[in-house]
Image (cartoon, rainbow, N blue to C red; front, side, top):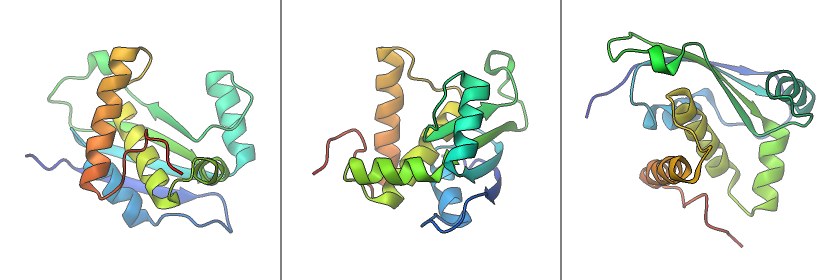
Length: 155
């Protein structure tokens, strides 16, 4: 299996929360890579998360993760050197979801980092067939990292 290159810059724009380290984000994203990527990952508060979700998706609430790709996936060739993108993770939403869903906080961050990395590489869940493909891959990658299936209800 080929090892893909990852250039990762992590920005912490929120304080006072239990946040993963740059090394943890790197490990999780690297597990999902199928090509070379350069990513800026920004961990934000609810105000910034809501503003970005409203500006780019037209939805007036903070969501857990947003992914921005800087190339048209249909036009990328297999010989393209790097895929460029940004990932924005809203820490308060992630913590709230982990608590409400009885998930380990680190496992939830790992899931969202992998989820975003897959989006960056062209995976989506807009229809049931694509969702099954993406969720199966996420579950397999998380299992390799020692985490439980994020789509099974936990108590």
